[in-house]
Length: 357
Image (cartoon, rainbow, N blue to C red):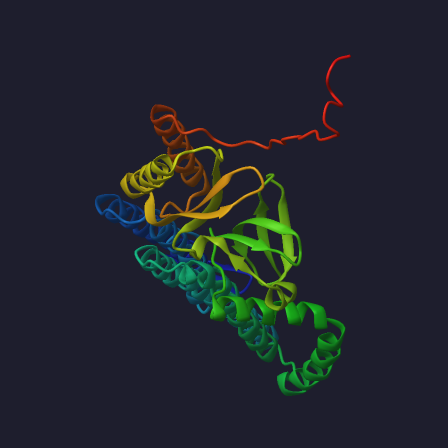
């Protein structure tokens, strides 16, 4: 046993063996825990986001914590000078603080993954917009608190640092008014909910029409109808008129059908009957009107109003096409003629002026 008591740099050889044995045990423990966690996750039907967060938690964060604890236990076996022991203690506390903060951020990711999965089962899209923002803000505060703890352990006066940061923060706030206003605008949009991700909106004052793709802390991204991606500052979003097309229950379509002036009275009644039947029977109809409204310059005008329950624009166009084609077919079968712009020129003059000589 004398061999294990051989001193190297003032410490027995067995202490070095135990130290490396602890590191090996930490590596084996980490490998076993990861294997058990992976097997447990494989046996259960866990959503992808939660599965990814759990695997990340049992990966590097847990491994770093196990190795750090093994290092600390092994380091306490050695006899070190007081100054060196103080440095080792300070480094360990700093490293432990950073690792714990890292683990907390992964726990935050897991918590928000659970919330995100729950939000997918709700009708509202507000949770889907708020979760990414709250996740980033929460992790920012966790790291901010952790950095303050690390600085305090290193001997810095955190109180005076916070006071200096308060003055500096005021200067930064004055210099970053636009950024702050955009952040406040994002909160206003998320709380007031004039639009959500996926909504088809029109910004008439800005001349922008498209679909909301993302609502961030600084800007809202809109995919326009021609395919380009536009970023609108949130403060502009909060102060502009938003026409949320996606929230309308129906699409109103109003037009005039003109028939020729020499259409008999009975045929006018038949035209009204045909229009009302077509509109009433079509599956897209939420409501409708069809009335003989006026005597136009060259036609008898029937005003037609159709409220289509299909809010998707392509479905609306398809339904409108079907209705129009059916109107044309039924009118042709009934012998009802559509009017088009015409002019009647009446020539007048003295009697016999246009007779041949």
